Length: 299
Image (cartoon, rainbow, N blue to C red; front, top):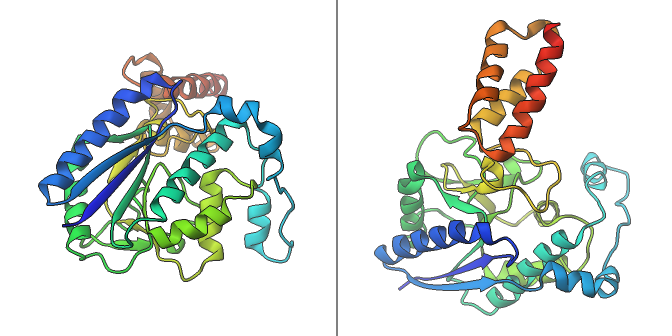
């Protein structure tokens, strides 16, 4: 019988997220048990932001913001991603590291699913999720070391399959849910000992530095990220791109048009969203800014 270990990264101060992660865990547990998995659930709440703040000198000793040699485009790109980390970002990294330490002792054939507390299940994708876990259990997806289960399904045509992330994404768009092997976690424990990037960019660099690593994603929508839809604000990213929100993408595309190419229909679409009460709170600010810009352009 296949064992699945679910690890949920949760922050106690973000109570609004509890209902989302509880619902997601319940769905995954019921879905995988129906498929014959044995399921265990682990919630990781420490180290908290408050713990990081009170021990900041200890964490600062692990900071290494030195840049890579400026000899390749990849290194130059990653040098641009090196950033001072706030206590929420450090807390997030450290929670994932606690999970890596736990997973490292598991059986290599166990399925270890890491999820952050804003992961949600879209009703239109429940079939994809069930088929994914069925194929994973039946070993129909080929070789993998990590599987990111929250990335958009670029190259989603044809049969359900895994695709190498490095073949599509220069940098990961999100890391809110992923499956990882115990052997990979042993390497991640060492890699994340140093603070240089946010976890998302750190995982991207880890994949780059390990070219034989099978870091994959499924070519169908699986889990969604509440902070990338806009139903929840991001506590880590000050510039949060809502790539899983169609309205946001539409607004971004209109905003990026040259002034002389913005049509009356574009203006009407923005005005409609501006007056709508259905869009999410995080999208609202983007709508208001876009509306103000377009009003200026109309003058």
